[in-house]
Length: 184
Image 1: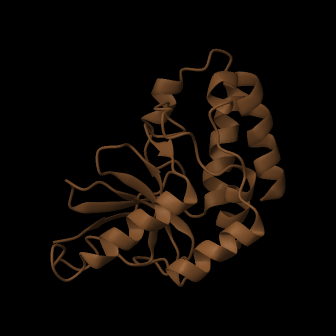
Image 2: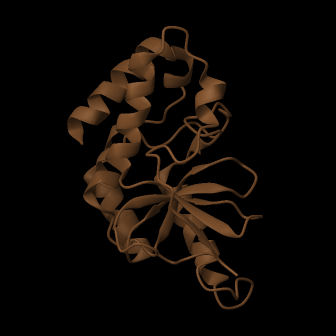
């Protein structure tokens, strides 16, 4: 994961310097530990590495990190998850409409997120990435892991001569996952 983050960092600095300048400073282990204690959860190693690289993007920067979504600071991601968790069983009566094991790390600002799935709710594959589109009844698994997701993003940067970021940010199911789960 460290090598993947290093490559991503290099590409963003070179290909998207204005966006790169809007990324927040990294979190320390102590800051992450404090958030773990407060929210009573353990941040998986790969997610911890991501946030030790950069703590999301500046909240005044509306450029997409990927998939028309912004990279959310960890404290905001955990706060949003806790708010959604409180709605399970009341506002969210359908099983897995929202799940307490999801952390929304990328968001589009309209209630939709790409979530880190700590438990692998639908497949049993821990740490996969899943789409939570609030107005849809399906939950697409878009990557088997955070590292795979970032590796595909890096491959895009490597393969493009003239990068059309808008086109890439609209890509769904980045690993080619045909996995779609309907919640009703």
